[in-house]
Image: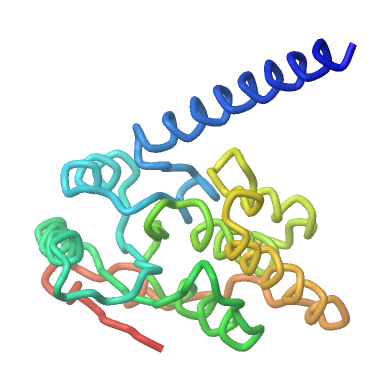
Length: 213
């Protein structure tokens, strides 16, 4: 009986592991690219130049917010800056760590950065699962007025966010729910109206904006 139970557990573990690897493999294949709100916000992993070109042209992306922060010594960063310049889109750096909690004040500052960015915006981190998930959830909750539990779905296995496999990334979930708790008593503001100069930056003026809080 014990032997049969052990075999059943092993079989279940193998099936679950295979399903998980299939999900993660699929996410990696297309850069973990997803729509957060059509025409406004998209999210992804760190994309190679060809993928950034493809998604920018397909979805008319006009700005990229890099949640890994500036990293001039890295090839991927220099390639991303160069590609953004060639595409005529604004590039913004905002450093977050998937292993560090984000304060309410920092979250509000990041949301204001998104407000000012030309739309549509592409948010990305390294894998597109943790930091991108947190920021997408915060934006949906604070700017689109989605119920907290609905917005929190941006932090899920569907996007590759699995705190059980990397305990440190639970900081993203904790940051989100602390933000929700802090703003429950005070209605969160909706997306502010932006002037046309922010919405319609011509390519000649879309300088690569570097921001490091």
